Length: 254
Length: 377
Ligand SMILES: Nc1ncnc2c1ncn2[C@@H]1O[C@H](COP(=O)(O)OP(=O)(O)OP(=O)(O)O)[C@@H](O)[C@H]1O
Ligand SMILES: [Mg+2]
Image (tube, rainbow over all chains, first blue to last red; front, top):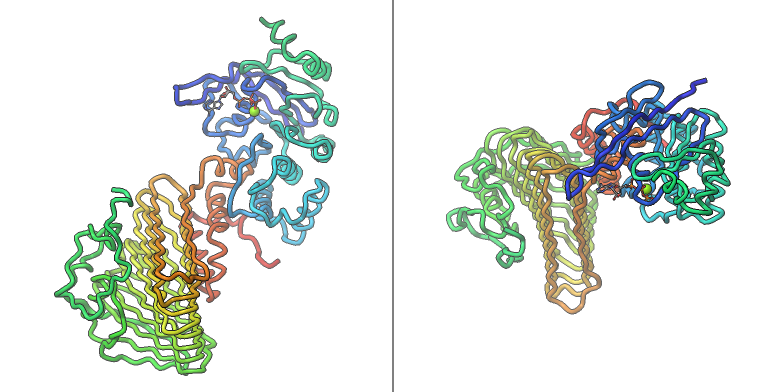
């Protein structure tokens, strides 16, 4: 079995803003192995999405120091699409609309790219419809344009649909739980848990509350503040944050 | 200079009966010339003589094709290039489809260009006849063409103009359409090649109940100038015009111009008209100008509207597709195919549909064999 490991070491990331360059990540260290689930919790603006985007290779974020490797292979030298084909997946906090491109066409093109060959049409339709059904996505969505006019919750479901079809070795889910109603949260969590159950995927959940973690138990919970991880523990950390906020961790550090 | 500085338009621009001697050489400041790079026209706007192009015509047996002296008094040229085509062509190709015939195969007029040439083609389709005509322009050189389509009452005609010349070709044409009572004319412009393509489509209605569907698909690459100008003159009651153009642009100094003029005259009661142009700009450095213009001189219009929009394939959309493993070229194909696909599907000749899509995809980059999906569903 292929046991993948994503390693982040001393990661410093800068973004160019209208007011000049701004340092956002200030030394992130994190190791996620296949089969493990990690959660990152932290204040708004602390740099969580920046970490997620940097792993995926968004051109806006400039790595000034540090490394990211997947099974020892340098991720930072790969283009965005190469990273995805190497097994890295990012469920975005704000998935964008892609006008003119239908969901079914998009999914098939993506699956073809990641698997390295086009699935046979008949097998593919069965697989896609099955995956949509298990996430309770109306089959009519296959013919709609990607994210166009989707509600917030529908977009998140569509991200998890891609997670299930692409079967990455490492997945970052950036606030996949925010904006979901209780039923949707359960359905989406079941999707993530199906992927986790394979034991082949390392999962990094970015979230604000422990609500998601009651459905998807994390092995490790990291507290993120001002561009770095300031505390690490188990599920009790999430419960402390729910009850008392970030003060106990930020205070302890200061 | 912005669009606001433009002099007022003369939608009824009609140079009928005028000769080159009394039509001034354009300076580039005129409304109908202000977007066109005159210096790249290969001298077409100052033309004094021209050869005749070799047209290869392939037509079903029931169609008559003859060479006649130029005789098109009802052709209303709207610019000096069309006047030049009418005046400098030594003969006219006359294509006649008899009344009540239904052609199983299209008439194909192949124009493989070289040198500086001028041509006139007149296509007459008889009452209740059904015909498809393809004008397929390839090669190089500089050309001005006057093409007239006369669709008699009840005829059903598709006229396709494929502009697919080499990257040094200059091709200018006016297609003058006359639409008979209850006739249906589909005019389809597929513009892919050339250095400069300037296609003027003018339409007039000869009776009540005529319908024009004008479709256009263009792909404008770095350095190319593609200009489509439409003038629909509603002068008869209860006629319809539906204009839909979509184009994708990529590369430095790719420039597409779309002018959609619709005039509904006092007599044209019960008119239905809609015109739409949408452009997709794939890269920096490409520019699309889109100017719809609707003038209504009657109080009794059934429906009238227009839409024009230029969108950008932005960095975030691209990132999303890349982040799903889709390589850059495939990402662009996916987006362009999705954008123009609905209009391409309406091209009534299957081989042209395929060729249009294949040419566009080729321009976007070399196909990765992994993405050659079998299409049957
Ligand atoms: N492109 C950008 N231009 C300017 N500032 C940016 C840019 N991207 C991120 N930032 C800034 O970097 C900081 C971290 O942003 P990031 O989106 O990573 O936060 P986050 O932890 O995901 O917050 P949230 O919980 O609100 O999603 C913020 O202050 C943000 O304004
Ligand atoms: Mg965020």
